[in-house]
Amino acid sequence: MSVQKGVGVIWGLGGFSVSGTGVYATGQVQSVRYTLGGQETEIKGADGVTLSLVLFGHMDSITVEVIPSGATLAAARLCGVLPARGADITVADTDDTNSQIVGSSTGNGTGTYIFTGGTVNKGVADACTITMELRRYENHLATVAAS
Image 1 (cartoon, rainbow, N blue to C red):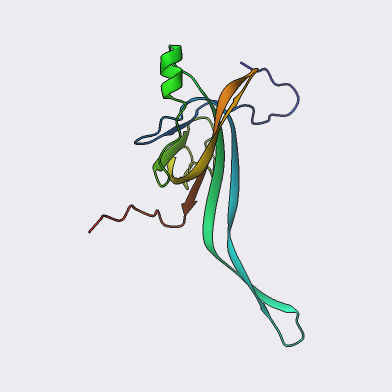
Image 2: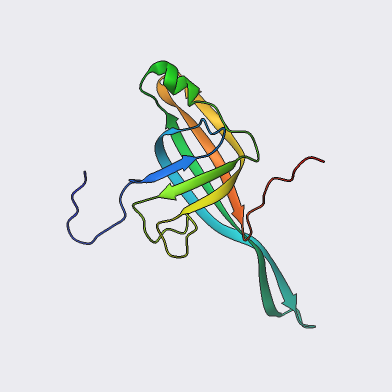
């Protein structure tokens, strides 16, 4: 538990979690990085001066770093596997009620992202870490059924 004096700041990750079908990369969340982005087009006049900026194709991206853990070493090893590319990942944050990350306009909700890739890092004198790259768009992209 932390004690704050002076001004209040958001400290730590608290209630942040990731889950989903086939998501084995779970454990101790170490960091979360959120980016709001998308596409843009500038409309220029005859003199080259920008007259309009069109923002579209909004996309949220997050990078989550996890140290796989479990009640036993065997359980921790089971958590050290990346999900399949394209897997739906649900992100929750029970501590940050104004979070854009979870995607609830009222805050304190959950958001569904798509796993686009990741890395497993192992070192000689360090804990294994898993980094997951997740994205979501204005409309959730559902899996297309095979014909």
